[in-house]
Length: 373
Image 1 (spheres, rainbow, N blue to C red):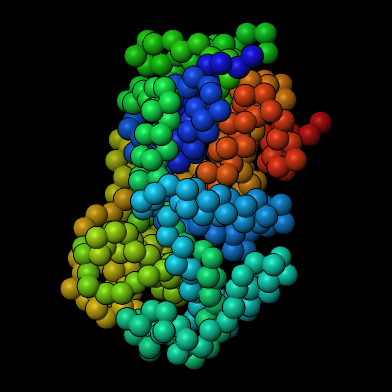
Image 2 (cartoon, rainbow, N blue to C red; image 1 turned 135 degrees about the vertical axis):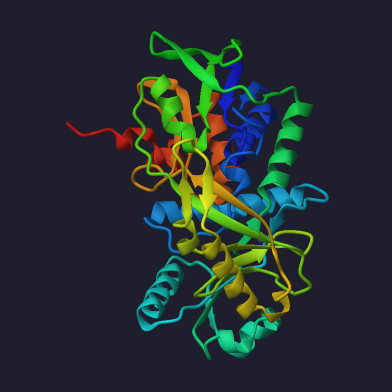
């Protein structure tokens, strides 16, 4: 019988798994090398979507995950972390436009909500955009998409879990796993503390491969860095996620905007000592693009720049649920954690307590990544 569970990582996945475990009556210790939300979950665009995700199983899982966010936000009075404003996307050249057409056609075939807007229709939704920054038509609108504020969500989930008896251990890295007779028996921490475990859930994000290695498992990962630029507060109306040709942006609370482009990601550099820097020219460029698209942001300055490491399993798909050869060791690791965390975390928690969730988790199990003989 599973009574004591150790969850490794206190980001969106770790918090969601912990909250679900405690709701189901388990005793849980969640451990993190830093503070809750201090890793990837604290530096993410956190766009909730299933736009262009393939194969179909991944798309459907993401749609179910979006619905789980809606249910949670509706069930919690005063929930302030979930924002379903939709997503506007358009392109600047013919080849990218053709890709966008195909994406819209594909998601419509899947039954996903999407429609084409004209410039006038887009301006009704986002009146502070410079009309010159919009094409006359073929602006894709995905109305059920949005974003979450991960730190607020994590705070809610962990507070809820602690009220049910969970323990949160911060600033204490996992240094070892005791594996005996095909099970993980305990988790060793840098402080010297030993945590006995009936089940362990690996929610370590970019560090998931290191934790897996401690259990004797090889988890292929191809992590990437994401650079996010946060502006000073600006008096403009931005109500949704925007994917424009030269800048991606969304609101980020108190009038701030969160800016990103794939090109900015390439401007992050790591020194020999591990210090991460970002080219100032790339930061200036993305801020200039935001100012051009929303003229009301011309007085905006850069308040902060954060660099997050995106955890991406080798084939790009989530790794979720139990491991066949180590059945009390479970994964909850993926890109798109902001979208998937609440739904996937609940399924993984149920399985960690002995339920079989193969119908939902079969496409995402760790064992698919093993080299074939």
